[in-house]
Length: 333
Image (tube, rainbow, N blue to C red; front, side, top):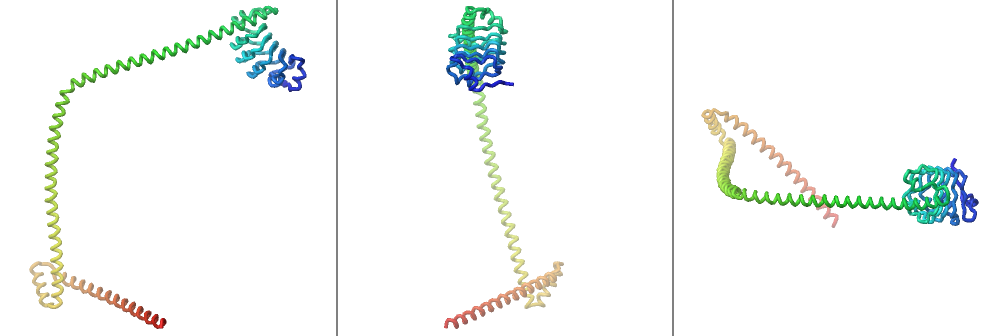
């Protein structure tokens, strides 16, 4: 079960400038509660169950002396170097294998204990045994110097690597530019040589094209003239044929009407004429004459009937209007 201390409980453990939170079975550091106690410059968090410190732990900048011994810390936060007022740091009996580079920024650190931690060989050799006050003071001084030097070395390597990358990119860019220039020069040379070789060929080709264009123009003009002559001839034949059909129809109609009118007045003569014409031509002219006469009589009869109906309608309308006018005049009087 995680133990969480309230602000009241934390205040009860504060005596003068010392805040004793040891043996509280803490799994998390009460950062907010400690930050509210600005007098707590000496904080004891030893003999708890801490596995890690939160990144907000560095906000406790008022701490001068910090005891984190006998916990289960695996590492310190990367921003631990922001606790610039820290002078005393006890990390005895934890599980720390590496230290953050920012620890080299703790220039005020005067005492450091790293015993009973699985440190790397390099860090362990720099830290030393730390079995007394003098050795712990030397441990703090040596670790800060070592980590600051490592940090500077890493930054120099990074900058050198970036410079190498920039130089490589510049070389690549310059190589590309030179290759482009060479290609451009070669292309210009090839174009000039091709122009010299193809100059005469182009002139011959242009002359031949001009000759071909002239011939094509003459051929098109001849075809257009031929097409116009054919078109005018066809149009004249079509008009002549149309007029022949129209005159044939008019003459036939006049002859038919004339025969019908004559047959009404000269029935015997017309009958004899049709008989002789039928004998000569071998066509049933009398039948055609009878059929045409019947059709014309029927048309005359229908037309007469329609005219009579129209006249009757007009008379009725006139009578009705006349009667209405008389009635209106009587009313006005």
